Each structure stands twice: as structure tokens, then as C-alpha cells.
Length: 258
Image (cartoon, rainbow, N blue to C red; front, side, top):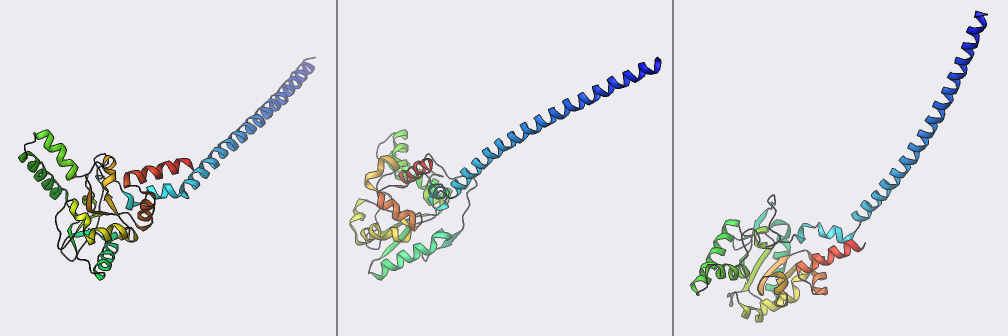
């Protein structure tokens, strides 16, 4: 009698263990399927994300925005604190970004071969020199009778604030003529200025502060100031009649549209 009792108990226990095993197995299968679905879902997201990343990598506007040649420097976009550059001396002792040096020399030499007499009067400037130039311009405006605030506001449309000048990144150059070295609108009518305006894009340079873009650049018309952006960009900017600020905005819109 006692033996039968034990036997029944063992039988019940065995059935319980089998049932428990089945429940655990079903649960594990369900969890496994759930995880599998979840992994596939995540993989899909990752795959999609990978595709976006891949598209971004092949997105011409995005690539262009990351191009060092298009660094935007103005009052709203000061030079990054970690910005570094290597310069190379020009024949007159001024220096220019090594990466764009050959293009500048080629442009000057080709113009010279056509009988033009270029004078590079400013190229790379240190922050210290930019500060000195800005203070001198403020003093000049104060001498005209403007208040300190008025002088400051006028000065920054003529000389960029230290750290916001393209000269501080070594990619801008002021070019005048040997027989016309005044930095005024009259220079625009010289053969040198006309030739540069018509040909500079072939060497990767743009007239950075055109007469009809002052509201955008916030800098007065400077027919002597040329900025290196690379040949492809320069040609495209001139084709679209865009200044650098507008061109970067154009690229951003194009990147978002992809």
C-alpha cells in the first residue's frame, strides 16, 4: 500500500516535470522568436541607417560642406579655436596657405604674362595684426567725428573683427595694381581688377565681397579681395551668382533634399 502511494507520487512528479519542461520549452521558443524578430527589426533599422550613412557619404553637397576650402569665416562664424594651417612665403614676403599656394602663383603669373602688374598687398594675417588693423580703423572713424559705438560699427564693415577675417585662415588675398594701390571702388576699373574678376574662378578664387552682396556678407564691396575655394566651387558659385554665404546655404538645402 505504501509502495503504491510512493509510486503514484513519483508518477505525478514525473508528469509535473514533463509539463514544466514543455512549458519552459514553449516559453524559450517564444522568447527566441521574439528576439529573432527584434534582431531583424534592429537589423532593418541599422541597415536603413547604414544606407543613410552610405548615401550621406556619397552625397556631393554633404561632401562639399566638409571641404576645408569652403570654411566660412565671418562675424557669425569665427575661426575655430583648434584651426591650424601651414603657410608658404610669397615672392614679396607675405604668406599664404600652402594648399592653395600654387593656384595663387599660377593666377598671378598668367596675368603677368598678359601684361598685368599685380601687387599682393595682404595675404595671411595673424590675429594680432588683425587686431591692430581693426583698432586703427576704429580710430580713423572716431577721427571723422563718430561716437565710439558708431566708429566700431562702421569699422567692422571695413575691417573684419579679429578672428572673423578670412585673412586669418590664410585663404584670402588682397590684390591691387602696381599703378593703382588704393583700396577703393576705383580699383574695380583697372585692367588688373577686370582680369581677376573674369578669370580668378579658373584658378579656384572668387571675388569674395561683390558690390551686390553687401547685405549678405555684411562687408563693403572689395574689388581687391579674393578668396580661394577651389576651382569646382569657384566656377559653380560664379555660374549661380552666389557669394560664399549663399553657396553654403545652397549646399545645405541640396543635402537635405537628397
